[in-house]
Length: 299
Image (cartoon, rainbow, N blue to C red; front, top):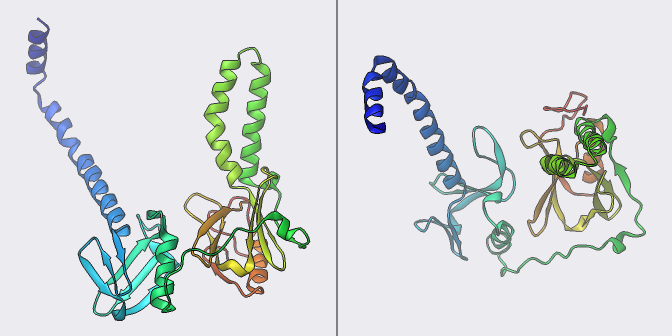
């Protein structure tokens, strides 16, 4: 009976309107398929399988390029990715061949790849593994640090963080007897809170070190010897505050969002870091008093 009713219903609904609805989904289907193919293509193009030796580099097991034919090489810098976005990556240009690009974030051993190229191809020496050791806090006990920071209470991310924290505290007090509801709200907002906290770094610079601190995680710190740093980058990934990327001489790379720093503070930090004979690649902070793009309470 159910099948019969269903069959009658379908036969009665066999109309032009039903067919028109199906045709209306075709453009959406084409758009989804096109976007999927494009995304897969970009990911595969940005992360080929790589094999290295002292004579050549091979991509995807078939495209072999010899180091003796290398015309140009950039081991750091922004490379095209998805829909106009860019990521850190490597660019190689060989004779009579197009450029080959691969992105840092696509490989777990990117620093080792770059170190091999640096040693074997550029310096013409035997490859050695990473040599840089992380400094301890005790090493910098007697250092005098200059602090580059702003107030989180006049910053979009800081204000949003404390509004959420205050709201959670208020809900907890009102619903102290309904502890399951309190835990639910805490779990719901914990990811957002952790993200906002991560945005609120600030920077300290001394004669021999750069130190990364956090406004709210005051017990944490990340210390770098200036002598270990190859390059500093000011960048602003999509929908994020301005960040400092630190690239060490073993090609390890780490990004620290610092939302509370104003434009003039970034410019001063750039001058002070460059005075330490360290290259600074400024990709987003205006060199004058114009506002930073995507600004959130930063000048």
